[in-house]
Length: 296
Image 1 (cartoon, rainbow, N blue to C red):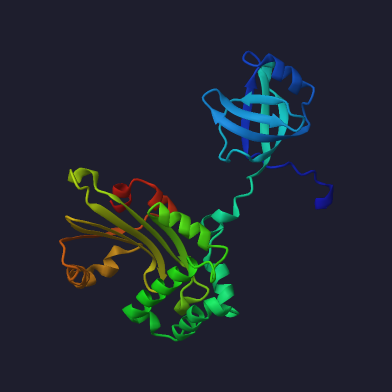
Image 2: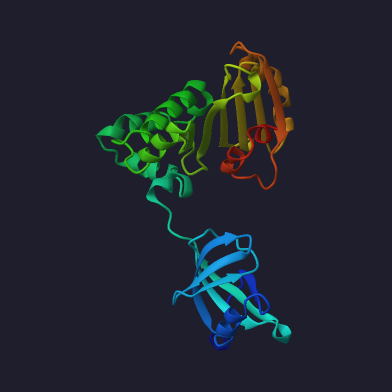
């Protein structure tokens, strides 16, 4: 019977405190060998990880952890061979709670917006009406459907009356020249949401005047193409466009049409269609890296 089998907690990571570098800490932990200790990850520095035990005592351990400062850890102390020190096995880790201000970034905002659209208040009713109008099959085939939905959904998420839980985050980002949005698609309810990163800065290579540079990174699911990523960078010299998808050959025949459409913007166009890495990185990882690296 499974009830008679002792269960061993999974080890998430392993740290060590050598006896030669921290004899007092080792002496303390030797008395606690085999027990489960509660600790908080205070910080990470050149000398190691700073841990604070539940009784307030502080330790410095060697190793690395994929958890942010403030994480609550459950540790099991075990002796290293030949009295070399103490090993701390991490058997549980709980990241610190995030600020509600960051919930759109850390927890997503498409699902909460979709729920509010089902029973909208007065401030959200115009967007809810547009959502219902775009639900019929075929709406996604119209470019104006995409542009209209994007424009109104972004506006609603930045409006305190329509989105009190998300608007502060978006207004703060706007001051920094960036924007992260996650939107449900009316014609694909239940599918992965559209994710959008926007940033603006100055072209440091343009000399005096420093021409503005605008970038947009977008992730959107398509039934025929799968997950598709789009990166656009606009500057005085022209427009760079990158499309990442699982099978670039699917768009080979459409490349001339795409280039012609982009050329109507009146600037030189550099278009590349590239294979999407597997596994594909989160769009926030692309946007958070060096812009030129993200565009390829």
